[in-house]
Image (cartoon, rainbow, N blue to C red; front, side, top):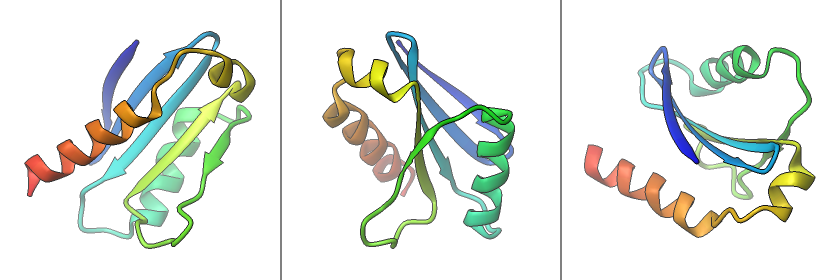
Length: 95
């Protein structure tokens, strides 16, 4: 199941798999994306444990991906290629 939320210029795409959840945060505003996304993730997780993906080249501070209950997500039927495609299409359609 996928749903979209919006939090102060931050779009959150949420995908549930089993008891786990993947949340993709993207920020399109003029302020520092690192500070804004740190705050958004803190509000979203409310102190719960999560795993965060790190961009290997560290060249995109406007998108962050976190997973809760990572073991349950990995055993579920989430197609990461579809998630990445949807994010790229969303960015292309905004430009």
